[in-house]
Length: 299
Image (cartoon, rainbow, N blue to C red; front, side, top):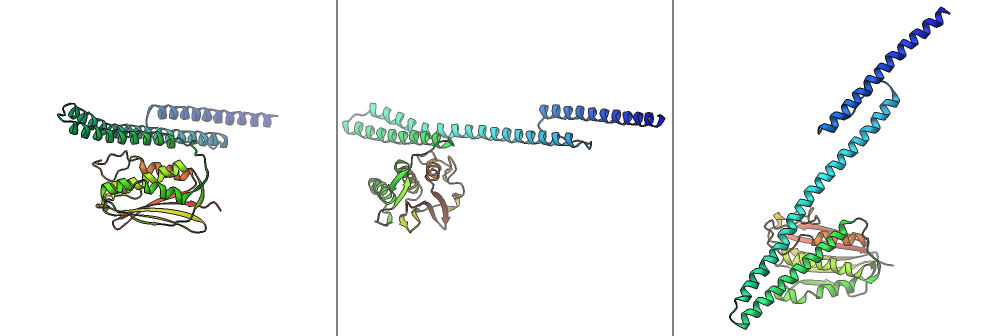
């Protein structure tokens, strides 16, 4: 009887010690959590007792803490990106608006009909630039939404490329550009969205015209599995181009932002191509910059 009483006393004493240690550990965890809440730190919860359930609980809480920190970092990055976006958009939209205001003032002061018509034409061209920018911004907003999808249907990729490229004929003439063109003439059947495809090709060609007025080449080819459109242009300052960043939003090779562009053209092209199950790449070799899009054929 005495032995059982002794065992019970020892067990009670051990359990009391364990309970006190357990409570101290819980209080320590509470203090750590309060510290994490009040301070920015990369520390994690730690336990000093060999209780598997408590250690598992601490591991789960640490996972939540890590996730919370990732969300906070992502939110901070999004805030920085948003501020940069607003700054870029303000600059890009303000430029043609300021130009239009200046030409409007000149138009009101015109002394001849010829001068007035000249300024009207300039203002109309600035309005067209502004409309294109706004359209790009609408498309950009759509692509930013991961749930955004395109309605896909059969289309002739070759005809779409040829029609879109040849729609630039007047612009090529005005800029004195004689592009080297090598297009296969046969129909190229694929699954895609015609409007999105035209927009993609337009953005790629416009990018080449803005940055490669010395030489532009356009190629369209296909084999039994895929169709490829390739647009290459010679660049004056290849060291200023980072081919790994050209598809980033608002990326511009000219840091002075001398072109009337939002810097969204290739970003939008990438978003549209990927939603049509295609692939888009860019690379710089010597002083030739190339953008290439590939699509599987509809066999």
